[in-house]
Image (cartoon, rainbow, N blue to C red; front, side):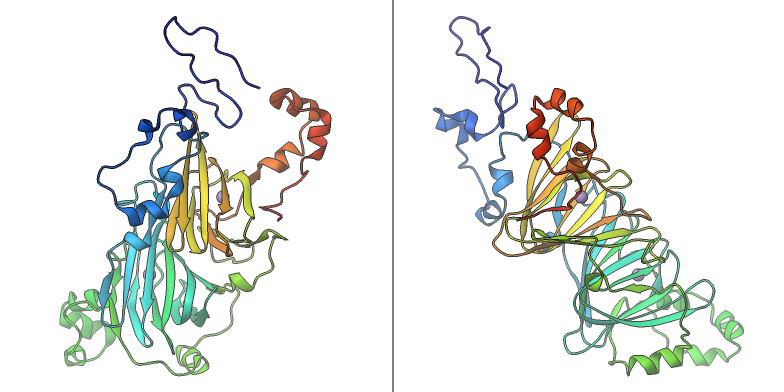
Length: 406
Ligand code: MN
Ligand code: MN
């Protein structure tokens, strides 16, 4: 439904006519520069490597309008802290200001490499992306856990509970941590070595009922990540730690869980407090999208979405009040954030499978699907809003599909 502008002043050319796919006045986008190629000149300083990764930022669709806070970042641009035994890099709200609810850490531990015994004031959720890792923790009821995790598995440590991580053979472990606060940094955790080095020796002796000399060789500086020796069997470590089976496991095999949605376009697997009961502050979805497939238009009413892209390439447009609409491209290792209730889709723009994680600082995964809403409205109401015929409405999908079939 286009409107004709008949009110142009004499001598002033008619403004372009808004139309479907080109809705704005003043118009935005390349297609509104027809006949005036100088509008597109862009020969100032530029990084061609970055340009090539971001076609949508460089040349946004004409439906994009205005600007909104950056919702793209990437572990690929975050400095690594490397020590003997592994490395880590992070994205906190200090650098990525939109990421207020979740901070992310990407870490690698060599075989035998140890992230030292520590704890923090926020909860820690994690997904394994490569290799194998042994994790230990103890809960507030004194129940220990020792588990081995591999690609596609999650762990969750509630706020304040102490833990360790150790890479296993043959190639160690890589994983992404998510803290339930955008301010939490991997560099402001409570470290075992720091505490012991900063406790008077007579207090250590009194506390443990041993001579002060017992602790004479403790590290005076913290270890954070250090190279250790490979542990023995899982069963032996569990027995040594006194592990008993209990009702709230700290790990969840997300990639092996039954999808909640699955069709020719891909699948969605979910872990939240309904099936991963300990994970009370982080809900997550593992989304796998085939080439040509798309995560349907939707939003999340209960929390911001923090995305981590595992493989493939995607574009996403975020719709905000204003109106504002911004399209960004994402690749493996990138992180996106969509504020609570803002509309979005995620399209696989590559020739390979696209896979990413959606995380929410919430106990439950929640979503509103545009198609599901449309399918459950009185048809007349929708027809009047969008100038559709009844036949048009009848052809629309009636329910939530999660991913558009291909
Ligand atoms: Mn931790
Ligand atoms: Mn989403």
